[in-house]
Length: 388
Image 1 (cartoon, rainbow, N blue to C red):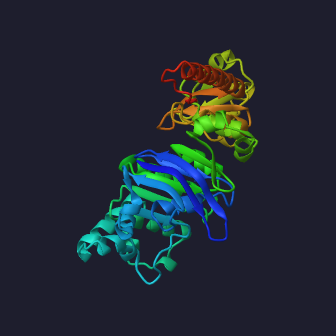
Image 2: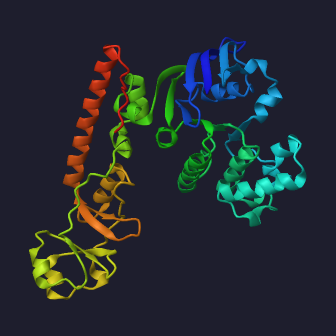
């Protein structure tokens, strides 16, 4: 665990970058520091590996004061990833990744084998090993940066806005890759971003900082979105924080309609029995083809190119209510298509049903939150977190 105890960073001109900050960063988690420009996010991160020395306070790593450790030993025990990757331009990909192991005395062959292993882990083709950074895309360079930070298997990974310089599609892919790697490796990650969507997606815990480096709120993402500490946090989260919160609400209990799903060989009686303005037509294996009006199906004059698109489907129990609602809103019929992990249709669900599920989840969340507050006031071990 990393424990930051009443840490302040004051510069000679009197500027206070971080003001009496206290945080407990759990092991094997992603803790995100987020806030407006000038709130001390990067300064806090750099104090953890002593690139910046605190003016006051203490930072403990597994109970030991980092000020009492040799700075080179401390930094080699922490991976560090920055914006634009910060790669050595005169070194190949494999040698960039092997940098820290070589500094630790590993042989060249062993270090390069480790680098090749990590290239595969971060989703890079090992055929790129002998390329130079300028021959890579921005997203590929960031993957190399992550691999280099992981090369010596450090328990702590510090990441300073590592994905902010790439386009949104690449950024999403890098975020997903980081979550996958974290699930496999279980590092203690401290991640700095100015993007609240990125913070909510990645963070196990999220620390919102105010200008001047003061802590505004420290909570799991779902709790942050459902119960902001004050007007500053609420404003920073934005007007659509309610939509973001849907990312933490499950689709497991959604009631799916199946009577409006029609196979290609459906009889006229089956089609007529479905009381709906549109029916979802599937292929012979149960995969969605598109929507049609019942009368056109009965007449037998429908062709695949005349079907309305079924849009993007969702997987119940895997995707969130936010995804399901998005699918329904974007559907030309207002109904979202639910599929299993093979792409076969499980049923369809209306915007109204999704709305009912959202209201139920909010009500359950409020009840759990109130129960937690009551337990806390009563001196018992109450959990005030809204699980969503």
